[in-house]
Image 1 (spheres, rainbow, N blue to C red):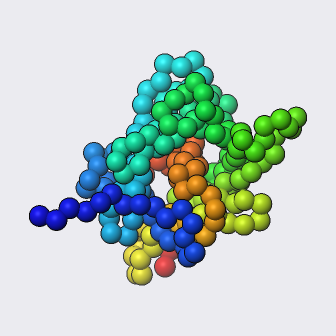
Image 2: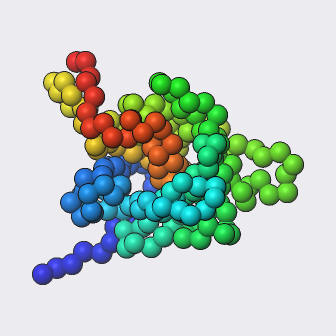
Image 3: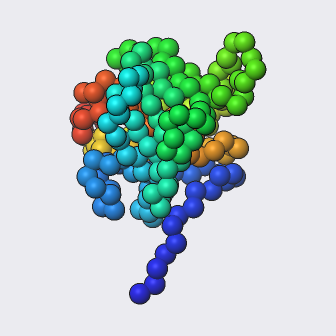
Length: 205
């Protein structure tokens, strides 16, 4: 029987392409968030772990298709997050995320890359994440350019749209794909809990 190699995410693709996000992927335990390509192959997955740290509730670890840790995500009580390289929460800080607006229809996050801001007295915002948890939609901006977007998968003549699976569209850029996926994960996990458990919402047609 032929075997297939693990899917490789193209870092500098010249055209937009999609990943499909779900907690119900057949290759993963139920409840594990997975990012799959158009063939259904897992490219990234997210494990959540309870943390004994005094500043965080539960960390999330972004893994590649082989299960190697890429980025560890730690939430703070004030709604901010920190991202560390690999599975190491004590060093190799990559970025910080600050929540600047939370409303029923709109959430805004500002992202600060540590390497880009070293030696500066005031941190410079490198990315912004703006969206609505209820609609499973967000847009990641770098200055005025769109890096990525998420959206529900609408179907013609369907009254209800499933929220258990949605699309992440990556646009051509030089950004690390794992960083972009990590920001989407933070957006999803930073919303009100009730928006994380609903499976369907009514959509007018």
